[in-house]
Amino acid sequence: MNKRGPKNRPQQNPFKILLLVALVAAALTLVFQPGNTLKFEKPEEIPLSELLQKYEADELKTIEIKDSKISAESKKGEKFKSAKEPLATTIDLGLNDPLKSAQVKIIDTSGTKMWTNILLGAVPFILIIAFFIFLSRRASGGGGEGGPFGFGKSRAKVYDSKKHTTKFGDVAGAQEAKDETAEVVDFLKNPVKYRKMGAKIPKGILLVGPPGTGKTLLARAIAGEANVPFFSVSGSEFVEMFVGVGASRVRDLFKTAKRNAPCLIFIDEIDAIGKKRGNGSGGGHDEREQTLNQILTEMDGFEPGTNVIVLAATNRPDVLDNALLRPGRFDRRVHIDLPDLEAREKILEVHAKNKILNTKIDLRKIASKTVGFSGADLENVMNEAAIAAVKNRAKNISQKNIDDSVEKVSMGPERRSRKISEKEKQIIAHHEVGHAIAGHFSKNCEPVHKISVISRGSALGVTWFLPEEDTYLQSEQKMKDEMVSLHGGRIAERLIFGQTTTGASSDLSRISNIARAMVMTYGMGSKKLGAVVFAEKARQNGFMDFNEKEHSEATARVIDEEVQTLVEEAEKTCGEILKKHEPMLKKIATDLLKKETMTREEFLAYFE
Image 1: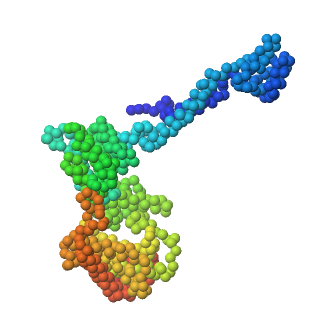
Image 2: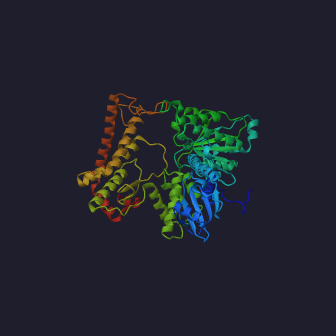
Image 3: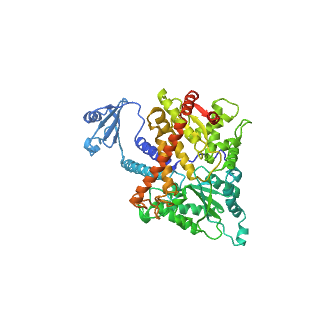
């Protein structure tokens, strides 16, 4: 264990010291030259002829000649200075009379001049060299990344298992993923028993899942459980503007990892360098492709018995190169999906450990309201609730704080400062109530959770449909009912005000996407087309040609007609529902304008 004592001081930059020494040396050389003396009196400047007259009159005590300058001091203590021709000698000037009492002294500056010129000539070169070294250090990521020639050094961050003690207990809601990786931990701890049986642990494990589901956290937990070093690097850190740098960094990373085996290498966002190879720009000499080839080579080149396991994370496994996924490289996939109800409750319990919660808070109830939330979203919910409690100067976090934070995370913060006219408020209220009533009378639509005319984010109003349970499949009728509820806002505007507004633009976009997905991807809603997939696919080389379609123009026309038919059917159904319940639409909208926000219980009370 290294102890830091008084002798441990910050390291000085040698280039700054070198530059400072050169400047000080130049200054000292110029100032303290031979013959330079401190003169406190300013000598009188006289013509050379006058100085020679004083010499002839034997009025001078000393004369100093330095290059073309002459300094003299009289017997009375007066000081003079003058100038002569550079090539004129004492004989030419007549200063060699032995009968005169003046002492003539000639100062030779040839040696000093030589060293001064050498030093002054070297200083610019020193500055230029220091400047280029500084640029190279900046380009290579700083002084601690291999110095001026550290372009090819790995940028991986090393986490010591003794300092970063993340365990499986810190990863909630991913039980299957933890079970899949538990044998990796056991292999790193006890490799001998696997080798006796002839078993080989996978060299690479690919963690697949949506953003925020805890892929990086799980990788750290594996390293923490196995108590081994953990090298973490992002896929984008391999790619630089210089060709070959990425491959060099891959070699350096694996070389360092082998020296620290057993250990784990974690490559986050591997799709940045692991995309399918093809005939894209750059061909086989593309920097990203060279980096991928080096990774493939390094994973094949592990010596037998090298306990180095590579973990990688991505949310786009479909774009990865096939050579990367074959057995012997990333031959095991661990899927981390969005958490279900039980998992969300456990995740909330983990993030609630260090927070002061009200004793009446029911985390199960919060988990039921957060369908579709990832682990990162749930962490954000608890953090926003804690911030709100501090703002309100509360002693603990209340249920209302958490409910408000759920809405803030899912729909955006309230924007009460936005000035909206009374006429627009009425349109917004009828629009949102139209969504709610159309969804309420659609059998397969999710139940209404909340209606609000308070602006949130870019939306002027919000109708929140919240599922009662986790679902993984959607039926054809459910998708049609969702289109009916999305039509509700626009139909309500036309029914009450006789015209529509731009507020339904996002609704129409979602309706069109649902209808087109039903026809082209899921084989639903069209007897003419049947169960045929018409969606455009990426070619095998990994590049999309948007001009090339997998169906004829005649089929495209039929697709457009079928999509239009689904949209019109949903619009017609919605119109019938709202026309039938027009009085209720007006009444609920009037009450919503007064309350601004309406809960599920308040909305359902109108239909009892």
